[in-house]
Structures are given as C-alpha cells and as structure tokens.
Length: 167
Image (cartoon, rainbow, N blue to C red; front, side, top):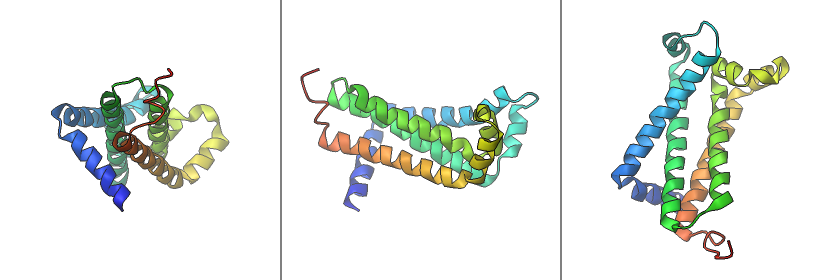
C-alpha cells in the first residue's frame, strides 16, 4: 500500500506542472486517435466514422485507460529524465519500449484493430490472439502499471546506474 501511495504522490507531483498536464492530455488524445486511425488507414473501405461504430462502451473505456496509462508513462519518463539531468540511456528506453509494446498489444481488445495491426502473423495466430484477447489485455495493463511503478521508483529513489559517472 505504501508503494502505491508513493506512485500516486509522484504522479501528482509531476502533474502539478502545467506542461505535464498538457503533455498527458495531448498524448492520451493522440494515442486514442492512433488506436482508432490505424484500422482506418490499413483496412480498405474503412472510414473513421465506421470505425467509431465498431467499438463498444467497454472497448472505448479500455482504449481510454490504455491511452491514459501510456501517456502518463511517457510524461513520467520525460519528468524522470529532467529530474536526473543526465542521460538515462537504455534504462529509459527499455521502460518506454515496454510501455509502447503494452499499448500495441492492448489493441487486442478490438478484433478489427487486431486483424489490421497483427494481420501479418497469419490466420492461426489471429485466432489464438482473438480467443485470448481479454487475457492479453489484462497482461498489457499489468505491464503498463509495472512500468509506471518502476518509473516512479526511479524518480523517488534515484537510479544508481543513471548517476554512475562512468559513461
């Protein structure tokens, strides 16, 4: 419970600055827009309005949650980088990559999005992913929340390897 409070406090501290409020809002809107736009661009005959009709309320809520968590994570990475005032190198990249991959696989909640984005994997893979899409989505949310947790811990405690002056 204490670790969750620390995570919450760190996110609140970041969001006290207007630039991060705008960053989180803008990134979340952009990510939601991309989640909806990708199938429109890659599916022949699909339109933006038609794509909007395909989603259920549950899928809209899931897209919003994924976008919000990913945008908070992106802005926390920027905040952590500026707090450390040193290049964080592979540590920041690994955390950002995990957030991106988690958001990418979070599209598994929408059959239309999944077939568009992951269509190159083949029909059998698609059937497996569609069958377990909610399990994949739950795993995605867990990975994204873990990424948030580790980023806030890095901000609160500092990163030993980041402060190492060898590189």
